[in-house]
Image (cartoon, rainbow over all chains, first blue to last red; front, side, top):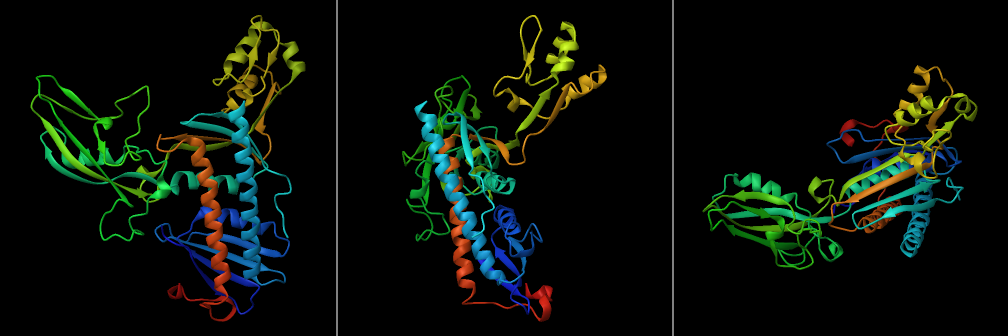
Length: 100
Length: 313
């Protein structure tokens, strides 16, 4: 399968950056946007898929103090934690459904 | 560490068979639920016929028509992890690690017209065969042959994902809906005669309301509110009959959903859901690796103050 490629369009200040994800779309963009929007250090976050024919997703992050890059990494970790709990819950629920 | 998910997600399975799973998801944001749905539709790999070599076709249907129909046949993909994507495989063209060959050969020997079904496809790999279920043991009708006509072909199934072609999608349906909140006003109900109550109960096309045979009480049974599809028929009925405020229909909470996944038969439904969560985790893992590496190979494309040229992208 096509692999993810990440580029960064850095402003002069490292608190503000646009990340360009290749081979990704709303599937990754929207949950990342959601998690980042809850991050206390983020002052602005938004994502877009500039053109439907190009498999690219832009994620804009502006923060108050930390570098945008670190905040993105934190958000990825949070989302991964969320998916891990979801996976556990799903397995539990399925096991329960099988028993009853 | 930030934690936007203060509450723990809750999952309850309402029904689960190999073909269909219905479950409720609570305390999960819509963006996460929607990306699960998108993954279910487009990023869970499965096997499907990708290449067809027609050896002989004297049926009334043209070759491309048959090839297209063959492509849409669901193939059992429980062992999909054992296969490589054709573009990632080490082989030069086709091999057992990325492809499965199937053969079809039928002829209408007698005067009688015969149907050619997906079960007539003979696979070289018992793990990848056309999906069959007890109700329709012969599978899907592909074409019909009248006296003397024949069809003979070789097909190659490959691994792919739904984002590239819908035939690779293991689900025939992956939808979620918000939890409806349907509330009745007991005071107004008490005021209504039995015939009016009956009219109200039957106004709902999804049978959300239930009542006793005498139409004295109107109730919403335990899980019946999930049937509601926000059609507002009951609200309209109340307005037309000057019973404003009898019923209120709205979304209960923004983070509660009912998720329905129907499998094409290639992978059991519950398995597909598990695979979807795994796929999302894999995606995030890739994303984290990319953010780790970005420091080393920092590509500063921008000029001053975030202004960059379109051509740089």
